[in-house]
Image 1 (cartoon, helix red, strand yellow):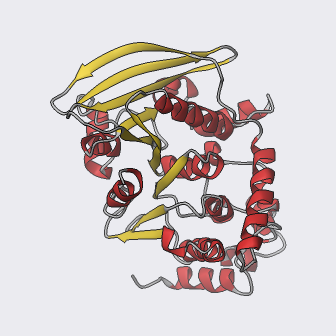
Image 2 (image 1 turned 180 degrees about the horizontal axis):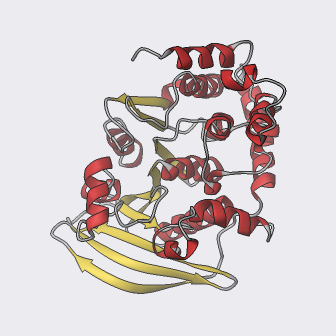
Length: 371
């Protein structure tokens, strides 16, 4: 697609001499421009990224990964799931090819977690692999992921974004767990926010308590992995992870932190914090304060290595910014190449918008988790 003159100038200015970029408009603004946006963009351009991987050998990769993962955990805070917890069944639906359980996980001292658990009905003679399926930003929570076409809004999103990847995986013979994160779905009363984005407001409010939405959601995703591990039908060491949009961001993060995930599919999330915070509002649930002193989402993605991963991007996805996406890919390639596992890094570029694809991910999951 040809670039407009404005887009071309932005990319020339932003690429000059650095992968840390700043919009052309801010570079040519006069000294009377006192808007805070200009200051933030300039600070984004100067972001340190001091722990960005620059090595070439496996030993350098291993040392970097250990050091950066430790730093990331420091920035996030504790994301350990509870050791003792209970499960309450809120609902039970039988379908022709699967069962859907509506569960509530509860533990002392932390908010309870709603999770859909999908189980195939086809008789099997061997243990089943499992997939943690993560929803994106918005009011639906985890309803569309599991195929709740009985809910009109969920049905609309399924049609638009191929959003029912949890249902698709259970029909391929996987146990599927799909949790509801904050502040989405049944875990937020969006009408009480007066038209403001609950995601941004929740980030500010939790910061007052020294907590982060992204860390709470990371804990809940790890808790959901523990729920999968409790299933007697689960194949040992047989868990994958998939998500679209914010679900892709969280699939990236939980896969980077939790080694129980063997293969990941990250859809519609090939963008950098440095880019997003320079150009547009970004939801508070994606923010890790201080991250840009050390690295960015590409470095977090590098923590998944050497495990297999698919990064999905649609050709018409307006959230994926040209040039920035290739910067992201190149930083991932550098990590996987040094690890000696470049063949485990997959990029699924498809014709379409911001949606789940699965063309590369589904057979890769079968290869890794069913073999």
